[in-house]
Length: 410
Ligand code: CTP
Image (cartoon, rainbow, N blue to C red; front, side, top):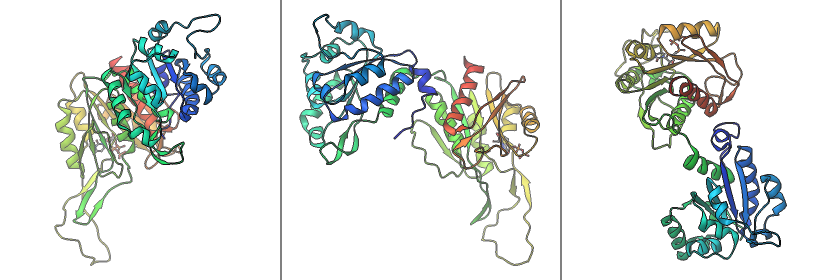
């Protein structure tokens, strides 16, 4: 299950958005309560419409309390008529979750025997459905045909999950989790892409400097921070090249151009080439500062009591990009320090001609290598110093990318 960052990006993107949530008669309707809660918490205005049979699955009082609006079920009651056209025009997006087999069939055929269907047929906004049904119903050709028809009307469908079903069977047909539905809506309708058209390069992970065919000098960097930054840049619309040292973290985002490297020299060559066309370069790799002068062709044999290795300095990638930096290029470096943190970070900012240095101190709990969290301070050229709390690395990546956007692209 995804974790929802209600205080982060979703909140920004869903703030003030008008969402019409349709709930149909399915056991998965209990999850819609949580969906309303998440949407409202993220700042969206939510109006709920239920089909009459949905009433058997969830209490409308719970939904009206959470959404702060009356729940609409009937076309008419004694006092009023629900204006389905106005509702369809009010919303920024209409989400039907869960979508039962029956309502799916009616939508596909333009039937209109309840308020939810009337609003659907009147909606001028995008419509998203999250189907929920038992596996056999889900795999029936009629269901597939109906869903295809919705697709041809321009409606979007959130894939069902596999798992335990209301029937007790295990299989396909579970409604997507509320967090996934929020993510889908955000990604597809409300994501702003301020970095569209920009090229970004990110270095991440350790480098391995070979001593012989079986040994190397390396470090404990996991690459998680740089990978999170690459993903964040990508989700904001940038064309991202990630130059990754030997990291065990899997990257599944197929939109990111991934260049695997091993040594500091390989990383330098890849970064140097990509920098030419880059608008943003973020150097988060823990590059080895020294590399063996010679790499033995064969495995080094154990002989003398004492053994020393002659090392030579690697090229400082950040510094060399800083020397080549052209107007308009944004260069960001990292500083991992154990003492005199601010002084060292400012030295790196100046010496390497960076626009920002992201400091993480090993003295802060939950910061640095190996952790899933980090605590950073950003030092900007010109003197601004921005401190952040300890956060998950994905959140830290958002803070870094937000700062770049605010300073250079707002
Ligand atoms: N860096 C780099 N190439 C190197 C060494 C460092 O690009 N050969 C980059 C890192 O990716 C980071 C920044 O320089 O963005 C600072 O790295 P760090 O290891 O903290 O500093 P160093 O310059 O290596 O200095 P020291 O190890 O003495 O603190």
